Length: 410
Image 1 (tube, rainbow, N blue to C red):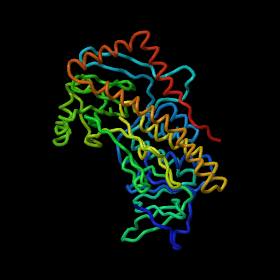
Image 2: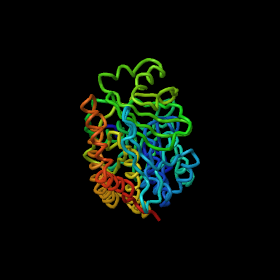
Image 3: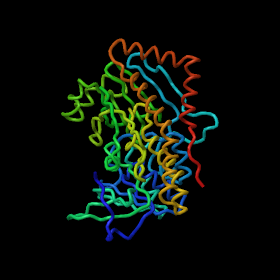
């Protein structure tokens, strides 16, 4: 177990909260806490700085509402976020099967897309701008520090050997699917791997291409298309038996293996930046906290990304955790009140996250259908979705995603 007792020479520079992991979830938590409460937050991360991965890019209306309340929405726009108002489904032979509006009456918060590294940078900069958040990169947590059976801080590896011990009243693990904090708490994340992956790459954007989310359907695998500045982000389904084709060779060769799936890709150039094969699996941890420490985001749940909800879940985890623990921390509370706050956080978030993991799984099953029969089923399903009945159901579903309740802050 990666824990140790606090020693008398522990760092006297105390914080209210230590967040392990400066990704989207961890930075969102620091921003939420520092925006609403007079708390000192330390965020540590083993990487060299923000923007180290290229995954989720969608900021849905419930998230942009939070960002507006936290004072970060204008920063997202300044970083190049693009607003999308439609989602389209194309078939490689039949053309447009479905064109869905993403704007609902009474919903004023936008649906934005922004490259994941830029989202991380915006969140980190917004948190630091509050003057209550300190970011430390190149900082690897080597153990949790405990006192009377509760986590009271972390030990960081020093350059050249040794440790630096830092105390806090709350430690939060926002350190991803292979969370060190979760492992140190002895909490498992059971996982089920999918029999397909996503091949991630960027291509140059065709002139006049609209700011719409697109899904390209093909028997060999669908492709998710996200608009960006002078680029389109692609996530192409790759079946297990074909993964070896995308693990070697040039970027040009890899693009050539999927170009037949959509006319949109013909004649495009691939960027060598951010290309990777993304293994997919789902999982949900049995506990969201342990021994007074909390977990958020991928540290407790991982979903298939086909519905673009993973980042939203992490940000909403952060918002709900901040709403529950913030008042207790601001009032100087320690063990019992904090434990009650952590219980309330899990009680609120677990059913929401469970439902989203389940919905994303079934949507991924539809997206991953292949062969002639799978192709026929997808076309029939989208034809039904384009009917009066189907459009009514779509609006109900999108309304639920676009107007999901989010915490209110002072």
